[in-house]
Image (tube, rainbow, N blue to C red; front, side):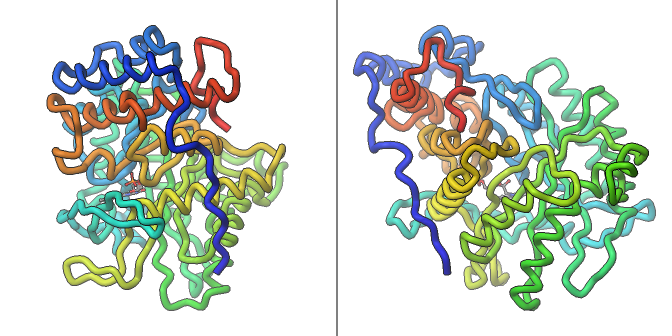
Length: 424
Ligand SMILES: Cc1cc2nc3c(=O)[nH]c(=O)nc-3n(C[C@H](O)[C@H](O)[C@H](O)COP(=O)(O)O)c2cc1C
């Protein structure tokens, strides 16, 4: 099993002016009891000289922090809290696509699973972290309810700078299937676009969730199948169920106003195959996606929960894998550039976020980080989104500000420092 080296991207401690560390410590302590400043980005720019604005799906975002799709973005109230806390973007829970008759080929993913267990987990490197144990399914209410969530969330976010992002799991043929269910792609995309455009005229950002269930098929067939999915899916979404075969046809095909982000999952194969997946996302015979997200959770066929064997998990092994794969990917591509990408996976500190940023991630989406036990947060007021931002930004030795200043020093960047100049 091929495993790449985990890169040493940052030293143990940030190399920054001790006066700045003291200032961070002071801010960290006072915000823990008083709450964060109202104009957080302006405060960071003024006090620490860092412009934290960034980019997601080709849109400018006020800061690089986002809520990852899941149980914490299922209701308007959750979205309201995130908008109030000032997240850069919120990815809604994944809906399962359907056709006009309400049929879902991925219906097995639309089953209600509400019990979650947040627990500590040890990584293979000896580090301890956190994971969420649950059985892992998508939106289980009606599609109309999901369309209402898109409308409500967009409405809530309208007067803010927070970007709302729907997420969808469309049909994926198994190795024994030859046809794509095109009507699911068409019907679901059109309906989500209509809901999105009720408040926002811009193209809709959309995350395409994979989460495959391919057990039982032989390895080579599965690999071929995964690569085909990554190749075809962007066109199926963009061309509303069609895949134009050449450029001449593309000009005439109806093109949906979407910005497609593939949420690249960690396949149960070695690191080399993970690189092949990333290569395929970039070099397809069809049109590539607009951006991608890397990399959704690891899968352990032996771990169980609530009588269900085989569940996804996160923690230190997840960020280790993502960082070593993305490092090798960046090394091999050298100057070839790449699509913009958003990092996900065990981002519990600003330091880990900056590691991902050094490998090209211009934004970060968290799930586990927003649902730790209360005693894990130093901030004693506000909701968990605010508490997480407090820790991510201001932790004196592990925080985003400290590590951005460290990298800016190493790269001799001019002040004010732009987070975007640290990316890649
Ligand atoms: C309880 C739970 C539910 C999730 N549901 C979804 C989902 O519906 N769609 C999706 O794309 N990812 C889903 N994820 C994956 C997260 O969006 C995220 O990418 C992943 O957990 C890695 O980030 P983390 O280490 O910060 O948790 C879920 C994760 C958890 C823990």
